[in-house]
Length: 313
Image (tube, rainbow, N blue to C red):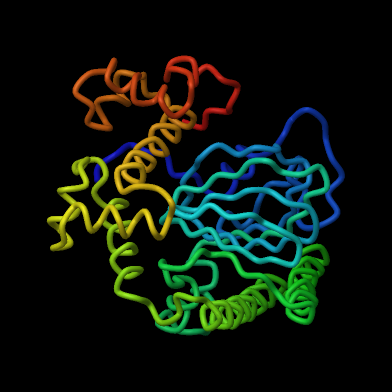
């Protein structure tokens, strides 16, 4: 795929989600209002002072997010899930992410980092890579036991203490604690997948995962169920039945949903015109694109683009 989708770095992501209505006290991590983020490949912060709804973005960094209290709905790639207390979820730079319906009491502890930040540690890259790239077949959220939650929360608070104290070698110690957090994440992941009904992946679920991955890679060029069925060497009817059983949606809805997500991303984070976005998404005319978009959003793209979302282009 060749798009001009903006990729946000850590400071830009924080700025994008920060509400400027009023300053809110920061009880954890960096002060998002006043501090220059340094280094720019790492940030430790809470969601305090953030907007209640985050439009789709794509980032160049990972985020590991612990929910202390409250709830919201989160989308990461093809997965939409509820964030609840004592849960941990991960955002990978390969996926579009957004959130909505954040409760007033939502409190999240977040660590954002680029791969280079922990690659500076003594741990070899071939050990780190599997820790950061989890199974794409499973939703990247894990419900923690009370003991796991207490242990992981303590890791965040230890990183916060090191950052606030700023003593010699504090970044090196934070790196080590972040690697420990990654191992804890993988431990939680293993427990979740071992209890999942899809731990022993059925042929049906495997087919669905392959279809979803193909859509992610090819949605700009391939728009029909038949094209994906041909790539998977199954009939369009069989593919549609499998997708329906796994998601409650038909295969065409999955394809169109991915196109709509990309459209929202470009409308809210790029300076492209509606016509340019229509061309980039390979619609034959901008009016065709407008009709497609309005089916999902109940408003046309030009109206959606005028909504008060910050542009970072």
